[in-house]
Image (cartoon, rainbow, N blue to C red; front, side):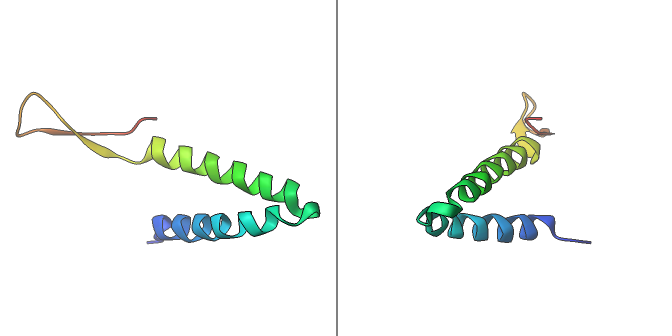
Amino acid sequence: MADYRKMYYLLCKTIDDVIDPLERIPLAVPYARQLKAALLEAEEIYIATTPYAEETDDPKIIQIKTDD
């Protein structure tokens, strides 16, 4: 099975690494901004859809939730 978390991490890390240098190139600024916006949107989707555990009143039960 594909490891989408690793792929997401690799792409986002690489995009994040190149945004600052791109912003120093006047003709590349619009593209750097577009990459930054996409990176932030991807981060919001990842956070909203990643499951997490939440405790309940019963200490033996943990509820799995997402923010989506």
